[in-house]
Image (cartoon, rainbow, N blue to C red; front, side):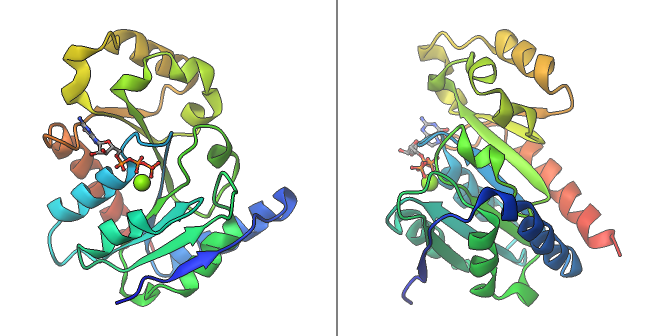
Length: 223
Ligand SMILES: Nc1nc2c(ncn2[C@@H]2O[C@H](COP(=O)(O)OP(=O)(O)OP(=O)(O)O)[C@@H](O)[C@H]2O)c(=O)[nH]1
Ligand SMILES: [Mg+2]
């Protein structure tokens, strides 16, 4: 099956919040838990999403919106798993916005979804400024990027519900200081949950999946 690729220029900032609210109402009505996954390029967003799909029960109804400046490489990785996916190409834009999200939802079988992942454009700055209508924000920081990133990109870490420290298998080869990283996060966002994972070895996925299942259950239970 050919992958649907939507090419869109960004919306003006002022209109974004209203559209994000409308998106969230639509998602709430359908009780679809929606997670905006953000990180710098290559930190492991697609790896997280594909590994999570593989580890979830086959009955879990998952769909994915892929955001990239160009290409449908990530959407192809998701499609191989038999999951509905839409690729948004931002034509140079460094983040997704709520209008793009609305159009992507129009191209998904929304009545048949319980969990929707949005892979935002790889960028640790702009995506944090644009709400899409998501319920939770998951930030991935990979070990080789360094433990100082919460100080340098505070908005991204301030807005996070969950911070996944990925590529934990590479920790022995770097000077990443786990205590310093946790201290930096606690200073700006004490409520964020931090899980250390490796998409390569599967380490740490139990805690991440436990959090995800609890959030899905909570969303389904809401009237
Ligand atoms: N060693 C190691 N490599 C990883 C891990 N997770 C992802 N990678 C590798 O890191 C590279 C980037 O992973 P992706 O999942 O494509 O990262 P991404 O954030 O989706 O990248 P963009 O979409 O380009 O922003 C790939 O070569 C992955 O195989 C990990 O836990 N350990
Ligand atoms: Mg990707």
